Length: 581
Image 1 (cartoon, rainbow, N blue to C red):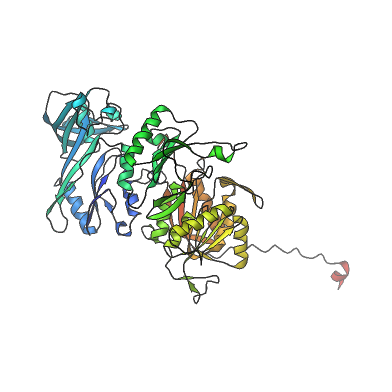
Image 2 (cartoon, helix red, strand yellow; image 1 turned 45 degrees about the horizontal axis):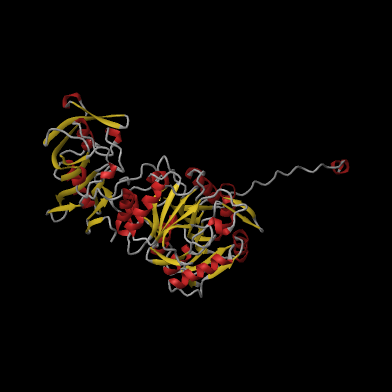
């Protein structure tokens, strides 16, 4: 069970949404909201329906409908105000009252909402407030984030919205002189997050009609960056993920990953004292045995292998190789192999898709019965997958664990041997799986000449690479050439996975190139699902997204391939003798 799930039956799903996560995606390429993320995670959640919303920076209880009957009932209850909601907020402003009801009309003005007298128009909003707790200085309870305050006091209020207008609690609190801590839009003191939490939701079950209460106690003491990961990642299955992602998490130019029992920091310079202190606290929270730092370099000429690898900052050193777990599968990592550690954490969700076979609502990987080289029905074999630029075979391990027969291609024999060790860690015999050391472009041409077809082909090339055979590869310049070689190898109704981490390449242009190459190959896309980078790599204006992935089911084109028009034949000039005859 995911840590964020509070309750689930055949009709309802209730979750504790973390702060920093939208209810739904603000745009197709701006990252997933919790709604899209849940629907694409489990087949039984494919039909979830949004009934109500929480702001991105508000945490707490959300309920989704799973059936049409539940959707109708919940929608009616919210519309008729038959539900009961309780929020908890923190503020650092003192007010003379302890209890009151705010009732105004809300009008949107730019990014904000403002209160107006009810008679002036706008939607009526009503909120009941009650003072819960007040503390100051050292007597403040442990649940209050004193490090986030400028003043020496913090007050907790209970808010019960009678209506469900956008921002109504935030607006009503601000206009009464106690804006929510961290709510800078409405005049709140800057803090690590907006300290507003939906703590309780009461409603009638859509089938039994019995009252049901969903609770999610506020934990305002938690680091919001850690809290987001801990709500979305199952600790028993995964202990390798990104803890801090650049400017989106308050570390411009810096990144921090959890790698099992160790932390790994990355930036273009050394770690300053503030970040060192944060790493110390996070290491203690995670139970990390040590922490490393790696300098991100733009140029590698003249740099030795030892200079590109991470250096120990504090704690005990890692073994030359150690094991982490992801989606329940062990993988070997190392801090002694230069710039690379053995696994790209931003592809975790896509490896899970291979493991489960579930891509998105209505989009599953091919069935276990497939056709082989000649696409003849009598040649029934395991699903076959081609993993290009396979590195240490992370994708191949997940696919093989799901029963696929894999072919992994990489230019490095060392990384392929590493991949075989990953197979061994997962008790997967390498027999029946191919590990080909060679240039991907040459191997794709060879597969094409042999008439090989694959159920699934994975294209995840580096942004830049150099090969003696094919020369330099630059993603934005050469991805089309890669697609031209791969598309003919995808069997009818097979799946093509295309991914790039070229940060400067807009998602729209990347998708347009793919669609153009599919049309050029006389194929068509019968299903498509775009995947942004995972939620532990949050996107923001200050830290735009870089990873773009698209899963496609490739079919034979229904339109006949256009035939070139025959050249118009010029009449031969007849000789004078022929004319006379």
